[in-house]
Image 1 (cartoon, rainbow, N blue to C red):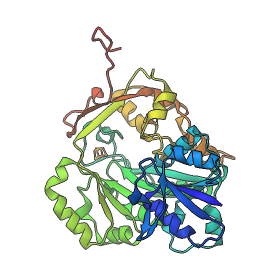
Image 2: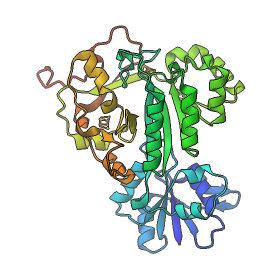
Image 3: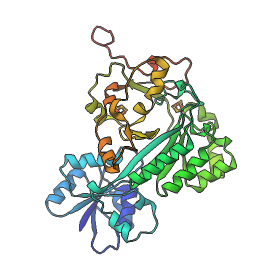
Image 4: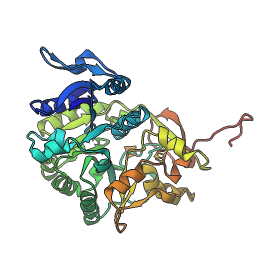
Length: 386
Ligand code: SF4
Ligand code: SF4
């Protein structure tokens, strides 16, 4: 079988090395939206051509490539969805999706080699799931998308209930590519170490990270440090301006503790995109949305993103009635399957009509939260809000 691997880069090269030596598979090319010779360079003297998705279509028509192998290990939530959309637009249906766990193993058995060739209609991996372990936050950014600066109670979920939900996800899906522990600020929850241990036990090959503003990271006790380090959890630091003076100490601390970490690029701006009227086209908004694959777990339900999962915080605070509508998928519904959930998550939700185009503002902390911090005011030609 002559195959092309989509995309090139780290994952593509890893898959190439796994498949090397398989007598019945010949890797003919890598597919990438930004092809470059460097991306195809496997080692000195061995280079695989890197072609665009349009070119792969031609090569398939000419019989030079039989199948595309689509890698699913990238942790950017919409990356796989973007690649599959591209193949669909090109009418390419001859492809397999390679589960993410393949890229995180060091040795592969017969089952793994079979799983590399997973048909699209058999692929039951959830790409991304995020969940709050604290609704509140110690930074209180103005326009916080998750409404943590107006969350009235320091709501920590019940650990046992969340554990039950993840056990249920384990039954429903063959795997989860990325699990993001977030809030609010996750380091406020004294049970964070239990989440690290529980998640790694259930999902040995998932990319698991804690999204934090970093302010409490240096207060970690030994128990938490070893739970993070020993379970290969990544501390993913959002780089807000308030962190600038302590960035060096923080980095040194994490290195000394041998904890894996990522520092995001500096956050200078925040945006808002909600409207009260709810009269946007939900399909269009969903299709263009970068958050559409940031699946959120809350109280036994999966949501397409943060908004329907947390909008009750906004409604409770301001007395509004933005409805989550049909956006909740109950993971305990009798007879529901992981495949059905994945299908549902690919289509727009009623609440998407409350999202519009981003308005961007400089980042700042909250002085006094008001509804306009989240609500975009669309103006008509006379200057009045529509
Ligand atoms: S640090 Fe994150 S969770 Fe906390 S208020 Fe800011 S945006 Fe919200
Ligand atoms: S509600 Fe829909 S459009 Fe709005 S952020 Fe969520 S997925 Fe995107």
